[in-house]
Image 1 (cartoon, one colour):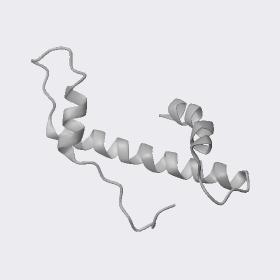
Image 2 (cartoon, one colour):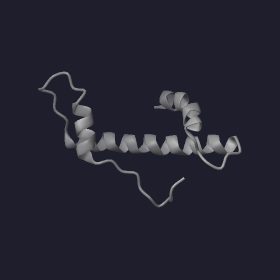
Image 3 (cartoon, rainbow, N blue to C red):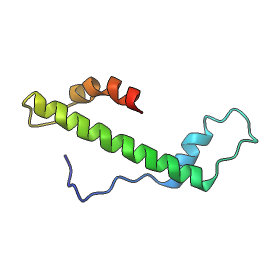
Image 4 (cartoon, rainbow, N blue to C red):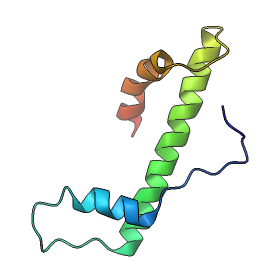
Length: 81
């Protein structure tokens, strides 16, 4: 995995555009607090996916995490979130 000191972060503007693209009505608004909360949830999701993928790779005695490791942990990860 990458350096553990690196922080995963998503820009609030990116999250806002992503969420508002799914709104059905133009009147629907997204507060800045909601965008920040969603960014934090996405950060936790990505961190958890990376950790679980790494553990899966280690359990298979692999030195590198591959897409297959991610695919194996994905169903349970989605159920947990």
